[in-house]
Length: 60
Image (cartoon, rainbow, N blue to C red; front, side, top):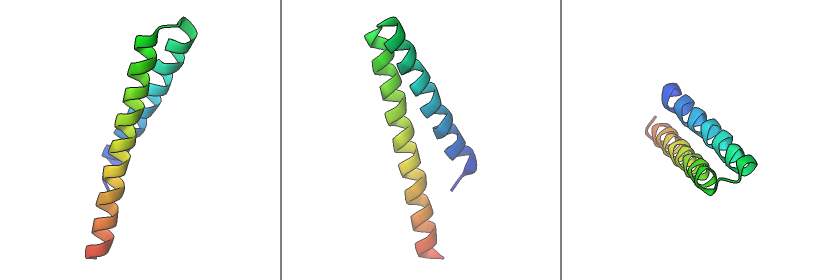
């Protein structure tokens, strides 16, 4: 697992949550959708890192 990659994914998730909240407050569906998309991307990145960890454990 790369701590740097995991941190980037967490930052992307926080960015997405903030953008979604701003979209909710302003009523902007574009910001809401982009925020949710960023959160989805972060989830995929975390899953990739988890898979890397599992593979490394299996090899070791």
